[in-house]
Image (cartoon, rainbow, N blue to C red; front, side):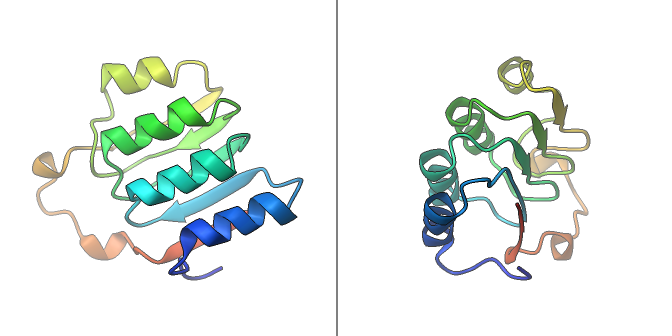
Length: 127
């Protein structure tokens, strides 16, 4: 899929109903609270999640880490919205086999960030 659907929540719900072997999702852009809610509610057993180069607030990332207990790999590299060395996030992610958060920063610390790098409508579904 080349663009994030306007009804991301409905898409995730349909994946949960129709794709029994679904294991991973790659999405870049602005990860909103409703996106996190949809992922946690409809895909709690997801194993692989890539949200690199996204706007992802700390509370949204913690929501995913708390709600998706089967995660084996998470990539949130070069995100804006949390610090890569945040102790709470690193502690919560410590049980994940592959957790990548290098380059992530708070918005205030990331002057000169090119917003074009964060396409709010990009999504890639991995089966």
